[in-house]
Length: 109
Image (cartoon, rainbow, N blue to C red; front, top):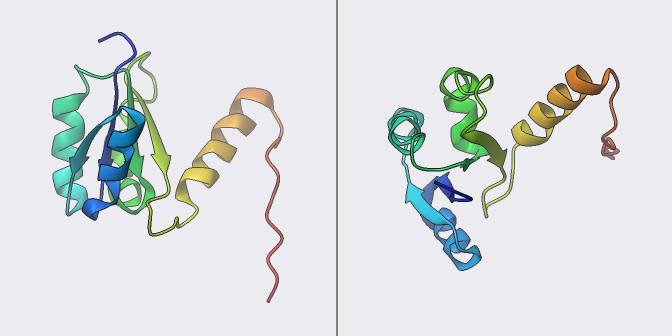
């Protein structure tokens, strides 16, 4: 299992991660992604999930938060992100460090 990484993504966008050497798995729904996560958890150290799917499977991802492996991270898909991954990283860094160290995007309307 040393250093193995995978991505669970919506649509064909996850397939572009194969170019970075990751194993890519396609899921069309949060339920399908949740089953894939369970299956892959024993094989991979790091599992990325596109944020569109991560929002739909928050409880399944949270179940791995206390374990050393796998590390489950949310990333934007090639279609763009919904901010879920960045907000999750913000919460974890605030909990670990006691302060927000990530820059906030200025929203201009």
